[in-house]
Length: 285
Image (cartoon, rainbow, N blue to C red; front, side, top):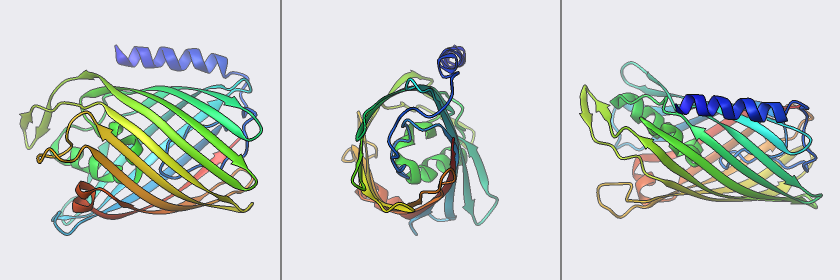
């Protein structure tokens, strides 16, 4: 059912976005770890590498590849989609895992210095639910913590978001307010052939970032905050996950590569991940 709903949503919005082309949005440099939605049509590939703490034995790195794109009409309506793939690199065989595919729609309200982005999408239950696949997706999510719901197996998430964007006099700022609602939860996680109960939690996003646009390169600092409706660990004392990142994006005409370095800020994250690196390339059109 959820696949048919997502397909219908994509088709209806694609019809509106048929007059493809960028909306009249300002030239806002894209953040590396915050939400992606804005008024620019583009395709891209993001790469992230999270390096586990020494306490996580047997694993050297968790890699994440994000294929994403969005198509925005001149009226500000558009569609978007993303597909994450994770690879857990360790002493034995590497484990490759598919995350939850996300599709949805965007609406952008623009003015010369400020834009407002509204987002509604579905993260469909395509994430691997075996033990190593789940570990690969979760560990790799630290480079895209705002998209943590794409790592949760056996659940469909309704992802709603609102993002004000400011860009003037070389200064740019972005904030993301969002909620990921678990609208379907199969309550099953399989580890080594054993099925465990697993409740998919509702997640809340409060992200902020900003920087300076120097013309050929944009330098930025980014803070991602994800909260859950219940504790995220067994000690019942971690309701928030946080990452901080420093990024640089090279602002070419259509090709815009970036690099980022980040760390977890919360106790749970620091116990699991030392730091993460990211890089990517997008083509704007």
